[in-house]
Length: 348
Image: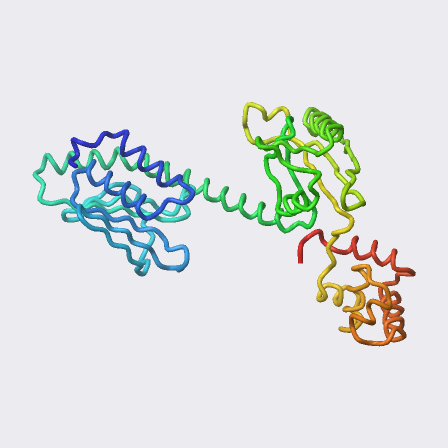
């Protein structure tokens, strides 16, 4: 493949497609580099970028007509030149650590013997490329920062113990955390349809949920209102609390003005118990008192706690009294409320 065989649009497509990809493989980078090599009429090419797992080093990916090589070497300097320069039979395109490019990148292309006209043509083509490569790198840096923030937020949301969903106006799920999926699997009554709509097994409740979601999406953030409903668990007894709140949709889509709905699912029977380290540090409990407090929060009676810990009921009664005294709670129900208020809604 020669320079005449490669259109400028093909090179630009390869550059933007690779740099902006969330998970471009080494093969994708090699293919893009080979396209640039062919467009410039070079014989070899190399891209040097910082190694993300080794500060102070750079990862080198070299490509020739019939082979490729990947290596890690010391990062000697960050280039400040922002132009194309020639050294011997090579052309270097250097992108410094400035103007939004936090990761310095260098592309080097090697040429076989060229006459003067061929060398001038290669430099002109390199100048054409550098503007687009620089723009792609800047966009890629911003885009990958967004990816990292997005992943961090989703990881945090998945650690929440309560079920959280974001729905559009049709009650279609935009995003749901792990707790919401787990709760829906256990409940049976609430499910997602084949096209991603949140539904209840009872048509009347499905209609009620749909109307509340639609109203919340219409309200946006202008109306501070929360729709609440109790969803009975027909086979297991008890119920799950559903809260629906309006939120603004900031995804820049054509439907952004419709808003969206934040749905919270809370099963009182599966509220998390703080881990022992947190209980002990909150109230200065001993190891035995911490274990007793944890079992109390799980709903065990004094007799059940004694059986579980292989101690007498009188010992448990004394430890329960100590736990209530240290937490300043007068009864177990007050202890439950205190722990719930003092504990972050995160999975241990």
